[in-house]
Image (cartoon, rainbow, N blue to C red; front, side, top):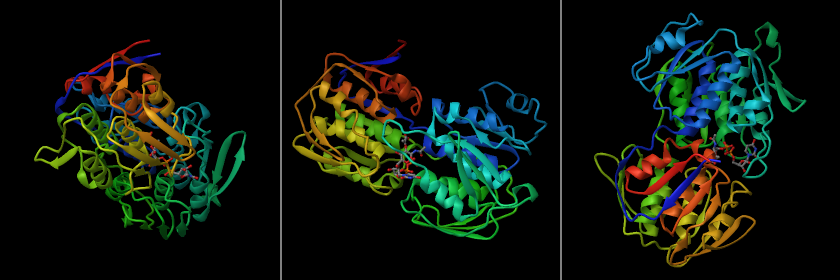
Length: 445
Ligand code: EPU
């Protein structure tokens, strides 16, 4: 088991890139399925989840290749497809989508990454059929896809669950039948369900209105991408999105927005260790509520010509935190905030409103000396003067990153096993922290 070995290091200094947003890039990759031809995605992070989504697209019939610094991407991506189009610049992800798709996402891949379910909408829209393995529960607890299915059903699809797969079909699929626009009212503003239904709606006949849609910046990024492909969408980024269906889309080139959760990770690192760090690609308007909370805790964030600058003397004040759908404080930030509260002056009450199981890392923080009591959706965090290094286990991606941050202010050595969880969403996490002056090493287990 690969691990991170962390020692306290003092204040962090320098600048760092957050990189492209995982939760946008994964969905944009799926959206490529909506148009035959060559798509180029810029700024896609080199993370494990992107590789899994690339495998999903390959199993559907697509070709996916990174453009190397010196390689001829065209030669890589062209081989065997006969698709000719934009070549892409170094670092780009080139996705070639054929005319005929294999409308299936197999268990082996969906099981590795539940976000694979986002191919459901594009496959139904393009082929009139989709067979996608049902994602199981995960470390956050029960995570159903009923809202995705209700939305797609409103557009005319029907579903059956067979042998662990959800099988969807559009009426008269064999005779060119299409989804039909409708008014879809989401019971909850689910991020990925909004992506799925939005992608289905762009090729549906007529008008679709999504009410109580997710408002995440990544949904707006998806709409920008689809619009560049020829879709007609208004209102993305608000809770009411209107889509005028079109008959066909064209491939395009698009730059992914920066990752607000990775940016938040570096802000939290500065809050804990102290220092002065610029996250050059962070966008304040994607994280208003978080920046307010960080300010209340004593982390000063300012806009500079380069990006967002975080300054802290490492002394933190407690606040209460309640996670909510965007624009509220994202559940993804919570492990970093709870880690900060662990060493802040005072008591903070934390309420999780999205995922029932998202407090599992608290046991690990307790092993490091944190004073946290939790029951159900709530945790009470009493700040202690100092954490104490210990061997701990990363239960999931963000919690794993938070435990590494805890190690920055824990006496002695902290060993975080389960580094693979962190690799799912961070590009060279240890390297980026080390470049800022932290003492973090990734060790092969
Ligand atoms: N929900 C349902 N039914 C559904 C869909 C969702 O009951 O059909 C419930 C969930 O169980 C949960 C709540 O709705 O209680 C929120 O789920 P949502 O669908 O909004 O989350 P998601 O789209 O599955 C995305 C991110 C998560 C992030 C959440 C919340 C991706 C790939 N994942 O998940 O990010 O925590 O939104 O903002 O976009 C991560 O990056 O590691 C990650 C988990």
